[in-house]
Length: 442
Image 1 (cartoon, rainbow, N blue to C red):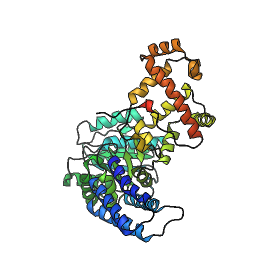
Image 2 (cartoon, rainbow, N blue to C red):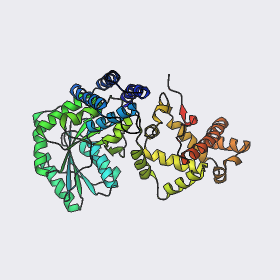
Image 3 (cartoon, one colour):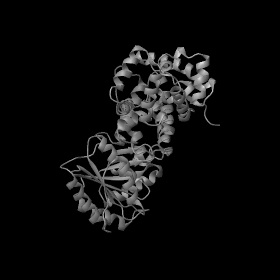
Image 4 (spheres, one colour):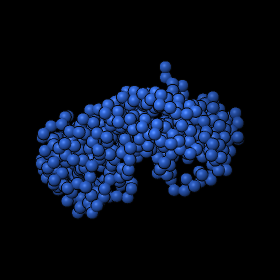
């Protein structure tokens, strides 16, 4: 979502690093580019105005930090202001005496029901025992959808017989309490637009369930309209935080950058894909680092830890330090990376890798073909790749439904990846292997 904005900001700030000193004219020119980049990203005009003014004042008034070039100083200031803009601080939810009630609100089509299930799965993986309450009695099949999602993530779902959403919500909380669930997520009804009936219903459900957290689900693809929706909800039903959906889309990102400044409520969670495990806690400082092309090492580490099976991390680390990389290592690392999410997104979290991905599509299908080739090898061939001669290559190609040329390319790629592992073991930044990418579409 932030790719275009990221490129524009990096270009605007990159020119400063080549300056021996900073003067008002240089800073003003750079801030003009920053302002245009934010406005083109559909960030609220008043938010942009205050944001740029704060950066300019700090850039011209602060002393040069020890060990930092002037351009680096401005980048640091922009990073801090971006973090502040999106809501510095903890994005976690509040938990009290069980069961903790979380009320999910939002317009129809914002992804509220799916987000409820995603949040339930996230909390279950963090050791909670969540339950879902299907209180959306307006949209056809909403209850069936939530029940199906609940079965997928192994979380119980309460389905009431009453036609009153207030009664269903209250009964659902009591049901979860008796079942020993410590978190209850109530999926409420939405409308196609903000209206009095919706707000009155939400207020009654809130009063009946007494939620500790009220979350507003917003579709990031709707741009500034999402900010307008947030303002309308804030006037009638006070919420504690926001859930931004479709953050993996190609919208310009203005809503994510504007909503905290406009409403005063932070983004708590972001949905980064369609799969039920593709939701994460929102960290403003990490998002600011991604926007400025600095990568996101902390999130990358967390994803790797979550994806790694027991003992897998230690063994991979040991082999990396030793500079070893067999096809067995490839399978382990590939499967772990695949569990972390789309490869393009994972690579962009690595500092310095993002710019290498410009104009390149990471070919996930090619990765699947590579896995098929490796699985066609014998255990001995995977452990000792140099033993693969001409006849063995023919057998591997036939067994994987590929060509000898593709097998040869993979053998060559393994050598390059082995070099990569040695570089990473020494703390050096590796280049992206060309065999795993393809030229941009024309």
